[in-house]
Length: 517
Ligand code: KIV
Ligand code: ZN
Picture 1 (tube, rainbow, N blue to C red):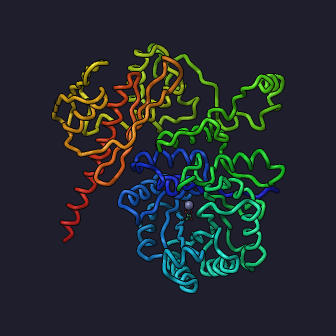
Picture 2 (tube, rainbow, N blue to C red):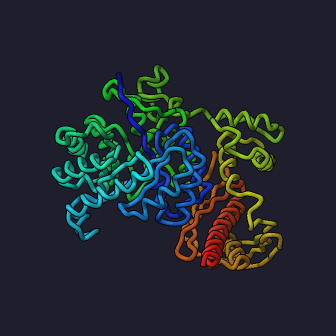
Picture 3 (cartoon, helix red, strand yellow):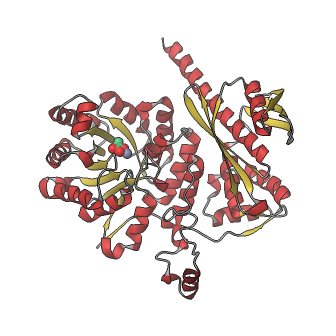
């Protein structure tokens, strides 16, 4: 019988740490729900010692997620482990993932230690973490460049000390599939108690080998694969989980293993993550790219029409990709909107029907027909821009022409107050952003501005994604509208509210600290 491969998702930890702007708690929770629906066995959702925001997100997700095991990262430091356990303890079961470098280069030049000290730290940290849970994963950071003798030694000691999962990361994406498979095979041959733990792999993609290495590791006996959706992660990213999952499914004949993933959720999960993380998916990306199931050349098209199997090794339906339907108009009722959301796989708890219906009607009035992908975009973006936000747009007016500078007048609700300001700029968006920053008095820098069409032709919606830096941190905002200037305004207001919320957390913390003294 085929054995199960455990899918360990680290989109919200390794993936998130590589984003230009960190996600807020609500966005992380949305991703966590999508991953839960996808059926990942374990989700690593943060590194709680790294910031109060990370701690809060780990705690919130650990409280809400019931069907996947929630995990958090810690260094081999008592305080890290205490804080990780504190964030996770709201969950019924949880995993603590601790890591320590094992390659000579990391041990000497990062930690200024020797291998014996690494062994001692490993034993201590695993014993210490076992105070909180029996589910301990230990990672040998930079295992891909660790000598095989040292790797076997530390893996044996980590298992003896009580780690139930041993992770072998190729932290810098240095190995190639045959070599990486041999590392795993050596562990099975040389560590006598290897069968007391699950062997996991975590591959980075610097040489484009991450998925190949993961598959090779499976063939050598690894039973847990770590990675992220769409392959996001440090530098060139991580193992793209959707690729491994579909490779396992399509080539079960060869690999003789299976996962418990609901593959029909793959496409939607990938879209949600791309959207919220502001990480577009290349058109030719395997499994989830927009071209992954489209056939261009005449010979291919002819072949597919005769028999899809001529050029398709899996169907688009197998990852949940359906044909785009249209037929929602301003005459459609809530039931139709709900039906379309359901058909795309969304439950009513994923979105706020009242808000979605309001913005749907607004869009239907402007556009006539609303497509499934419009509705999906509205549900997400609308989710992020609530009426209860501190900054809300009342109205704006812009004037721009081919000769001369642009001017803008913006009226903004700041809490209950309405504030207005007129500004000039090198274009209408610049003028509006000038007015908004003047009103909010937040000294921000626009780092990135990106405009994409959602949908086709003149009917498309304009989606604006911006990244703004404020006091050393980056914030992401997104806006969607038929009018690209309005999308730009919405994106900036979204960012300003994110900054405002982050400031409230800091003020609250300072207040509590004062109270404790
Ligand atoms: O790449 C890596 O080595 C990691 C570890 C923390 C598992 O992300
Ligand atoms: Zn990593």
